[in-house]
Image 1: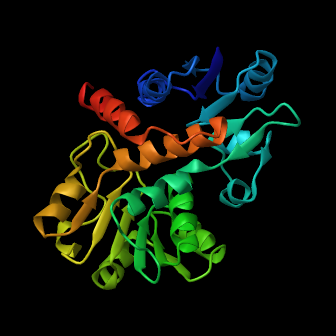
Image 2: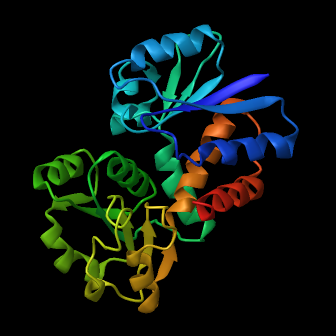
Length: 270
């Protein structure tokens, strides 16, 4: 049996296991997906153990994405983003690290037939998810503005990209009106019914992706829908980063519909 898994702390409520297990079942694979929760200061030892045990691949979540980037052979995009969320334990070399969060953003837009080329986009947040979204949008040809609570992080991230600017959350007032894409990568809206973007700034020409997936319909998405904007919930981003990881590990086309059904069933059961 091939073993894949997720490493993070905490991981008790992750919905990745049922999503990946659904893929194995759909394709008749003899494989299993297991969640691992090492102590926050023992990630290096955990990876040595995983490699010794013959684990085929691991997803990586909070708080280990940056630490793992420093202990595996990260590909160019993961190195630029500074975070790894997918690791492939190869037989012919050191573990290879990827960032499939960026692909998750791009494929979520592709699924909804949103062409990012030449679009004006606003990214809220400059943390790990914000960095992944910013690189994905820039690579797809969008011009982006990054708004973040800590201004220096927004400006610093923008300086690493082409066609990008950065500023405080107060810059949302002047940026969203002319934008056609808005991506929230903060956790605002996950623990409470709040939105990182005032409803009065939203308009019908926007496509809004909220990386928060629990709840699936956040206050931001409800407000965007009310003004006629197109909305993309965070489960699509979560789905496609998992699809990308599955395809990286196995070399097979992922059964996207089966994975999506299992993911949404798990989220609805929470």
